[in-house]
Length: 221
Image (cartoon, rainbow, N blue to C red; front, side, top):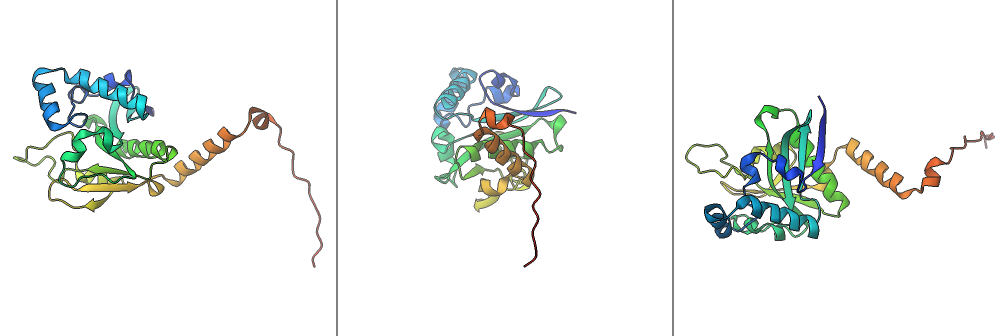
């Protein structure tokens, strides 16, 4: 089974699950989102948001593929790009953090660690860009009957399971935080350090043969 992670682009946007592809819950403020869903084209609005965010800020999502099949995704951005972020009772998001807007794993691929893989991909991306932390609003009553849940708000249990900690409690929508310095595994940290090291070396240095160390003798003092 092969797994790979790719950036969200206007091309890979088409691989989001159908309901998510046309959802603008996060990308627009509540009034504008309702208007777009009622009389506009929410899929076009989402595409415009992704295009603008990519142009002005950079990567704003990750998709996971298993054996070539889309298996899950996350979306993230600075809170200034996410109008919905100010509508939560536990807002605002901290100034040093990016907002993880939503996370979803296709049910057929659930339980295989894809959620952690996606979050670690976001962590590596944001660490390189100088961001200190990821924050998210979780739904503490996700899936409960009669709660009118928004599927775009991921369950609190998911965030807790991948290392987030609650920084502002709320009975429905707590705000959670993941410090990026603790988000990456030892293996990921080593890979990132090696990538930086190799990236800083010139091609000549990479091709230069390594000279074996010369043995030296020493006498005890």
